[in-house]
Length: 200
Ligand SMILES: [Fe+2]
Image 1 (tube, rainbow, N blue to C red):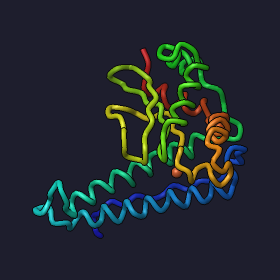
Image 2 (image 1 turned 180 degrees about the vertical axis):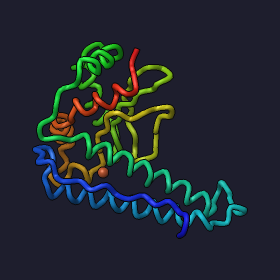
Image 3 (image 1 turned 180 degrees about the horizontal axis):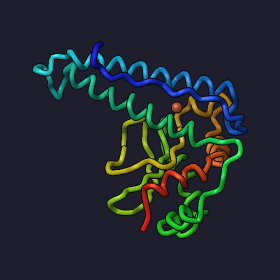
Image 4 (image 1 turned 90 degrees about the vertical axis):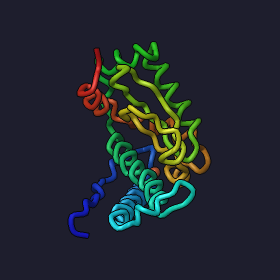
């Protein structure tokens, strides 16, 4: 549709991970592309939907808005996840570590909390967020892409905990996947991101 903004999926090359196989990674990227295809369909359809018929019990407007959040959040979360993984991850900067230690006492406590958050989310995400107003980091467990999503929150670390992210390589051993994937988060890259956001 003319004048209608459309999202483009980013291209991802398999980064030779040990936590996720090439097949699983590439299938995951295919899923991500599917979310963006649906997001674009929703955006396009929303241009001509009958807004006069909007209704909170059921309406086409409502359904499009609800599914837009699902697919939009999925796009953002998957991009953050794919981009944070590296076969040769760099450690966190001292700046980031200090900011984390203000909330979690030690870096190790933060990692334990993130792991527990990942084990607590269902088909969803473990997310470390930074709230600029509070100048504070916290971990949250999201279900799906759009349930229990904190507001006023910039995601800085995300871990996909949907079954599609781990069952191909790890079966139902979610814990093995979470531990392995946490070893391949590029904390150096995360540090660069947060240094633009915080901290006093
Ligand atoms: Fe996913």
